[in-house]
Length: 381
Image (cartoon, rainbow, N blue to C red; front, side, top):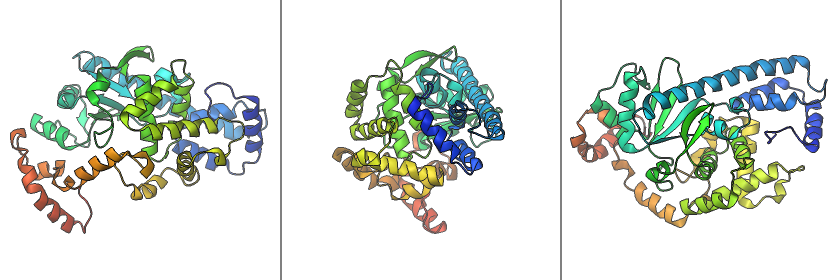
């Protein structure tokens, strides 16, 4: 159910009827857990008339929901500590996104928004600084069990799209320097210049502005083919928020070249909250989104790995999402992608930053060697 508030009568009647027809509650619990919506499912089902759901099922759901919420609050606590002890202390421009950053801003019950990690955006020039400061506080660059030297950190920041930090609490912090795979959609410096400071779990936190955050969630969820339903709930939470402005969202999506994606997400959402959902009322683009979403509901999130094999572009799952300009620029980049060094190249021959240009010369030979050694598979990290 897509609603943060109490369900309307039509939703309540529909859920009651649907619940009474369920024969395998373990399957429902499993799927809810996989899609990160188990606390929301429990809250919705607990509002049904007594006797609709077996008491043993409700008890099990309640215990699992508590575990989910406790984990979410642990994530939120780690996020606040990282913000306060490193980013705010050393005045590093940054923005938190998705997960508990989004939930704390827009959910009525933020703990119900389950997440596995923390997503942080900083400028490329500050990635190494953040990692160095984090190491002094006991964080490690995943998957290494020891501190990395400055030379190693520079290489890791240059050659890896995301730098992952973890501490003994096992909470993972993903440090991003860009929001899209190709760096053709969002401009990091522009985003960081427009961040908002919000009270998240009663702590000040720098987050993406709502319009950019909404556009990013749309792009991210479609790129992952709606493999997790909590992204659809994110849209619901943001759309229901008093600050949501659809016209501004569409303007932002148009400037980023992803208007078709955002319009399709909005259309899918508004159809989902109607009393009687009809796939036939959706446009062709919105039907594409619904179809992959439903595949994941039936088969589970792992279906994404099969579905995305046919993806033509790094940032998009469907041909209609990409503008002609994006297609031209990606294809031009793609022709030279085999020359782009990876962290593996650095690990095979560690060089100082001033000599990283040499990897562009050795890359074609190392790529051919590795492809032959691995039976033709790519060595991209």
